[in-house]
Length: 112
Image (cartoon, rainbow, N blue to C red; front, side):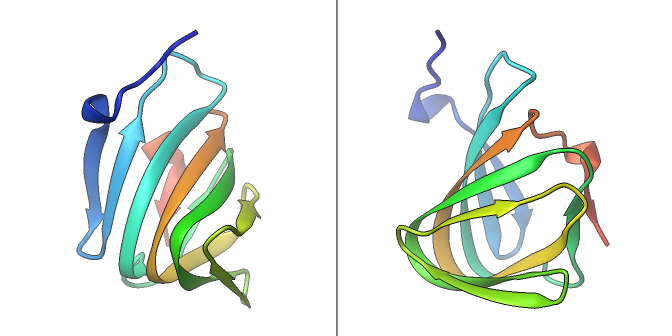
């Protein structure tokens, strides 16, 4: 068992519009983070996860995600699954919890 307290979260400013709070675990199979997005992420283009699945729960707010050219709108309480290789961007004003499996690796999360 492992617990990561809120005050132990690693804050990453991914862009002007996006702050991420990583809850780093000693486990290579899964990781979790909270993201606050107020605008668009990435600010231009798209992102792609090369090897990990990203399960997202919307904690608050509303927005949209465009995945491989299709737009999906979401709001508080919705859950989304982004698969490896899908090209996407986020837009809106919302807070999400993201679990990635295997563990998130910034070298395998490409802005394109």
